Amino acid sequence: MSRNSMNSKQTQVSNDVIPAFLTPDHIINKRLKEEKAALAKANMPSITDIIEEKSISQNEEAISDFVIRESLHRAIEYSSLDLFMQPVVTLPQRHVDFYEFYGRLRTRPGIYLAAQDYMKMASEEHIISRLDTIFLTNCLKVIEKQRRRVSKPLSYFINIRPYSLRDHDFMHELSRIIAEYKDIAGSLILEMHYNSFVMLSPAEKKIIARLADIGCRFSLDHLNDIPTDFKYLRDNHVSFIKLNAQMIIESGKTEKGFAEILAKKNNLDVNGIDMIIEKIENEHDLIELLDYDIIHGQGFLFGRPDFQGVYVHSVA
Image (tube, rainbow, N blue to C red; front, side):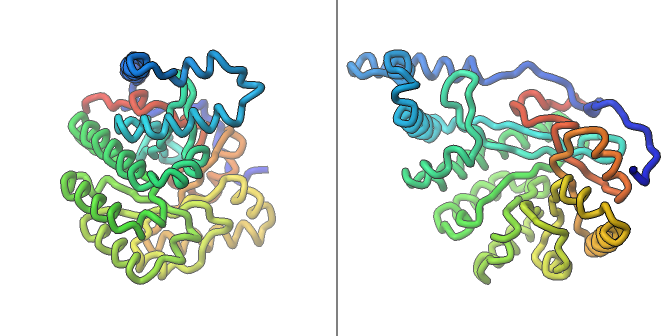
């Protein structure tokens, strides 16, 4: 039974967020028509033609690989990775404080692949750094547009892969892009895998420090437990850690486990590190988690990742 007697609230979205029926489909469909016309002129079949002419059940793997590869190169040509966003809310009020960006690859109308589904092939094609650059640039454009619409700008989580820090060309481009959008550097929260973060080299830590100097903050995810290296995290500019809701709930079922979580959270608070609970999917779990004085939550309960156009702030 939960230690918190607060009543469950209905799922809601902050009043400063309004739905905007903005979908990139009309733009992308125009691109597809242009591409199909160009291919027809060259007497070559389009992706859609191939899918229509062949049985997916007979050639599923080959066609899938073909479609992903062609979609990747189309994304590079048109700088057209689609952006999805998911809100991160304050608890228990559920006001939106942050958004997290996700890059999605559009393979067919209404079908989008998450990064884990296309990164292996992107690596084989040697285009990961170009995709990362497109993703980051498009994110910054959306952030800049949002900042012009509101009086109180929000902050945004953007995933950055550790090997990108080791890519000289990408880091040069990253520095150039952020310099171009330097007024919004303070709105950027760059997020990476915890295990990758603790393995950063001294040179990579210098890059982190340089980005922190211009206002960027950092977040870690994929943690198996609440970290205890509080000073290391603070000294390396970490402002947020994300923890799985079920992991916290299971760990806190005993009195000892509950006390340990509270003690670790207190140490994080003292060191200026915000503990965000992610993958909160239902009201029952939320009530359990509120016992820990959680300030921020993320999950389907508050909003699924959706087109960035769905989350448009009204003018304050």
